[in-house]
Image (cartoon, rainbow, N blue to C red; front, side, top):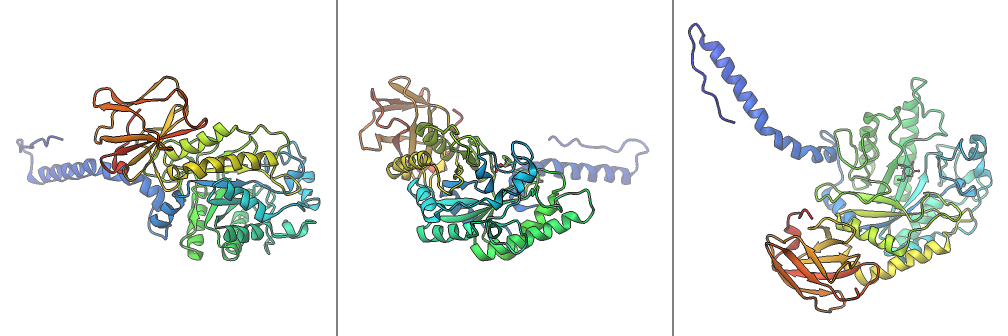
Length: 454
Ligand code: FHN
């Protein structure tokens, strides 16, 4: 901004001149410091506005390298095949819903089998709904009678899954609702109720963190008015005072789940039922159902293998994790067709896992034709559709492709220049029906390239 030189007009005294000058200096400072502030916004989202312990970048980077996890929505509602929490007082009358636990007896529940299904799918972590909005606790909590020990089943589903995860090398994580429609204290009608509610939440959280040592806490249900931003900040610091390394998603504060704001509390973004936007700054994880409903629903429409794999690849191509959801049946088993679909995903990842785990998204933005991930001086070009015998990509302005080949080693011919970009010659049939990978070997570190608008 061009500084305007001020001159003493008749009768104008020195002090007003100095005052104007200092106002200008302050204005100058404010205007030119603005970009710094906006750049810090996502940090603010991450930094919880002010001091206080927060999850280290190393821990979060380790989480983001995992790329693929299993989400499990399970509870007494599976006896009705309706949606967990939301069908209470709708498809299932409230009194009936709140008494389902008296029939809840998933005798075929086998934690090792659930975890093996996740592992065989190529998943690196698992999140169980220890407590969903209906308030039922799948662990023997001392702070509510509405828990698994008062069901015919009695066994600690959360505990058995934490042991099975540790045994099979998956990171064990806990979904913990903020909204609890069963708890009479979860209301702002009576003063003091929310304080009691938050105290119960703290007691239960201390219980699950100290007993099961979760790798991550997946909060949810933070949108109702009785839950305040201050509650979220208080809980975040409370959790950090128990375990400074436990990762916390961004549904403890308020505000939108897909972007950070000054209302955010948590370590990473959680877009839902959609692949998140490419984001190289803020960590993110899309949670998506393998069928449509979160909890089990008979004959619920299941995604095809192509949809499943391409969803995973587009998520990784956008630099995010995919938390893929199953809803086990009332007897405690995951449906055989879902196990089979997950096994097929695992087979694809056994072959192409290096193009997903521990990679960065970009430099191209995912679309319905292709997505890219990158590691070192390699770009992994995932091709979903073959619409012609050539695929044209925007130019890689500051890097040269030295060679290109399919994952099976078959050489791919290509041309590149700054004008028409990168032209890849495609064979008549792509080697993989759901997502074929062409490796582009560059003359420099691909992870340092800026995002290319395609
Ligand atoms: O209400 C919940 C829903 O039941 C499910 O748990 C999803 C999973 O992310 N989250 C909420 C809806 O946003």
